[in-house]
Image 1 (cartoon, rainbow, N blue to C red):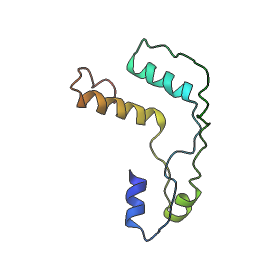
Image 2 (image 1 turned 180 degrees about the vertical axis):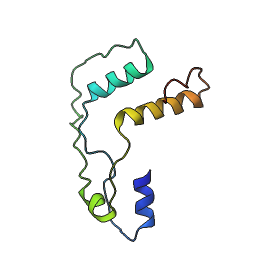
Image 3 (image 1 turned 90 degrees about the vertical axis):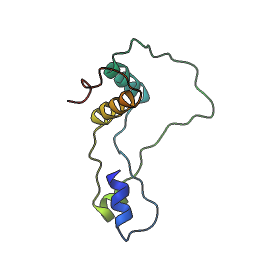
Length: 100
């Protein structure tokens, strides 16, 4: 969000990528979520879907150079905050242990 605000407050115009330039495999992300929520879910593998293509990392060079912006929220903290907010918005109990 701070990247978007920085862009809005600047005189810079044109498209920029705002995101993480750290590669994360979907398998690793799914496992992190399972671990963080204490789920007993299992990851199932199926055949590839023909229309799916590998995602590439965004090139955030322009936003770094033009606006001095860098991602500041690491994946683990972002997941923890997202899980907390989702649980809180659904009125689920025991949300306090997520954010330390």
